[in-house]
Length: 154
Image 1 (cartoon, rainbow, N blue to C red):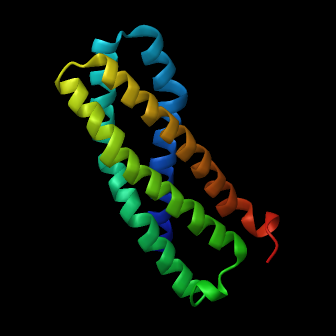
Image 2 (image 1 turned 180 degrees about the vertical axis):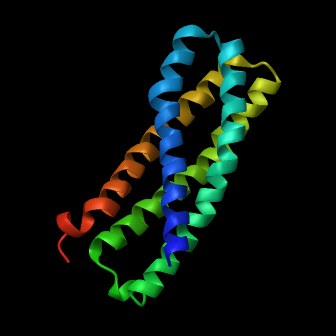
């Protein structure tokens, strides 16, 4: 059980922490200092490395989460409301990530390869909105994990 919780927490930290860094630190610096021919390949390369880790998180988070649910609460019926809320926000996050990866991210990579900076910029703007939404959901999910038993009635 301890190992499952460790993998669960580390996966969440890597995914949400990576989004926080990208959105709050890298994005403003890159936008302020780099023109599209430099900025867009930077983002495509950063996403390529980061998304390997996100894929691991997208697989490990539900696996370890359900492991805990079925071993601690004997299933979803026994899980408290905040655990159901975490499950819901997590599933929405995974759905948003899949949309981002198979849609705008692939289009960004294609635009960068073709040096189509206008299309690449539009795809990056879409990615920014999805990451911003997922970051907020991730922070909400972490809040539920840490204090849900105190904030959400049983």
